[in-house]
Length: 118
Length: 115
Image (cartoon, rainbow over all chains, first blue to last red; front, top):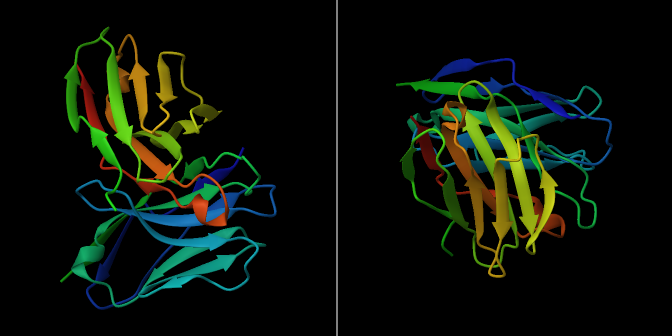
């Protein structure tokens, strides 16, 4: 079974600085999707960024970027120029191969609580 | 476009009762997944529906069930509630097919408290 591990239960960063959240996963598949979700204290889960395993280029969305190391099964999230609004729980998630009619079940890590200090 | 909506937002039930939670996906989305979130176990997959058919099921007892209607709205039911069922229940919707269909969008959740 696929597993996702986030080894940092909590992280903190100063406003305007950069922080990296770690995620490792285990799978025997060669094609899959990886996601980072953000869950602010209001509890609405928001998709931050996604990465397709077949793409070598790391995904980027504004201040958010990933470092995808397929061989190492590592998928870290870098947040640049951190803002107070970035404070939230961050979840790394794995989704299996895009088979026709296949399930879209997400496997989540335990999450990393990010605090942004002013 | 309206986002994923879940009703009710908060619910308090007594052990042994049953409960039904509702989820309305984003318009045009045909896949609905349900997750249970607790401080101890984190986010766990319950089940997924696509075009009124259950496409996948997580490792939960038979007390947890669900269904999807022709308009893609979904309900989940928990019978014979136990204290351990207290959790935030999240619903997520996606297009359900095609490469762009793999992004799931979550609702605000239903906070269930069992006393």
